[in-house]
Length: 501
Image (cartoon, rainbow, N blue to C red; front, top):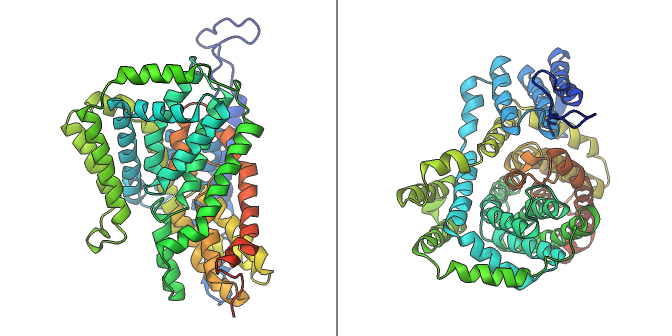
């Protein structure tokens, strides 16, 4: 996190202009990132990657520079040497400066439909806050879960998971974020980080990811992976098969997250929020009856959920980009004066929008220069003669690491085709490869750029990118081990054996 040394360490008095201490840590990480990029700039081109079928994947000069930029951006994002949105701008600038990709492509990704979907999700969440729906939801939930802080954490996680069963995890995170901010205000009046706040918002991001793997509606990665799987195997899978395979995985992950955050990493300072039921009942009574504006926002939200839910089953809607329904309701909120221009200027977190703009740009950069495919082949061929469980864990680990840096759809697109080819040589069930990959693609617990809920949670200012990374290491190891456990226990029980003839 960028420090702001505004006082003297000796006296505590404010420092005068020109007396600020030099932040050597920040300078070190600035130059570490630049050095990582420079190293890939001066090194000779790496050797091609070759898959088991003999197909070569050469790494172009642009692809090698993309790998260097990938490392530089990761270092700057994790250690927040500049605002995370500024790092995103740097990604586009470096691509154009060093001819990695044309400026039109590099900066064009900043307005990719996925970024606009995130913007629409943020506007939907803002509408809930402005109309008072967030308060109603928060009061209802707190009335059920009671005063115990750990129970409140578990209740919020389960609400988030249930919502992701029927709507995209980005939209869920944007919707519940104001609700969690309200809960935080009841917990601590001062606007400062707390252990409870860290558990609440980091848990929000993790629970949104865990819930998103449970159905096809939680994220776009599922339909994309199904398409690749059908292309390579000729087999068609169903909505129900995904839920049978991955819903237990997602639910177990949610309870593990709760235990780690509430009992290990961030034990709440208070065991209870005294008098919360009485305060909630009093505040709920002040809200009065539901207003026409609230009803309108609820209807708009329901319409978006229905369109996104039936999109895969209605041919006329299949080509409709998922950002369109989100932006349509955003426009309706302006037309009906639920939003004003001040909301657009001051209440939309543009730093977060820029963060995902840069994430999309570096993701497409790695994909289109061939760097991501090169990494996938280089890594997975190391395990082409390994035991099947080692091979499956290698796939899971690669997808898990890659999805922390680039779009999970891109991570699946880069790794799954290679993995399915190698699986044939090892007689590994391709369906097992698919479920392991999809599970890991939804659980980026390390970096803010891994998923939109991570970045939305960061708006709370309860944690730093470095804290998010450190806390995410143990859950990441645990979910990898869960892949191995599911591969030898649960998945064979539901008709997914590890090996096929």
